[in-house]
Image (tube, rainbow, N blue to C red; front, side):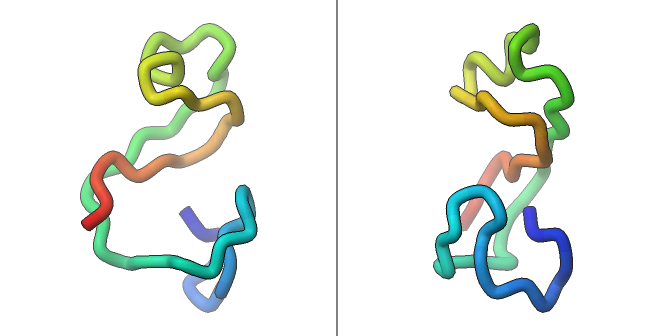
Length: 53
């Protein structure tokens, strides 16, 4: 998720291919001990969309 609505690039990967069409999100604070992070293959703490259309 972006830090601000006017941001034009992803702070994690630098991509400019962004969308506002998503549903649900999960907050992962400790990916090293999270089963959900393991399933989603997340290695960095943050907020992640669950479904992007």
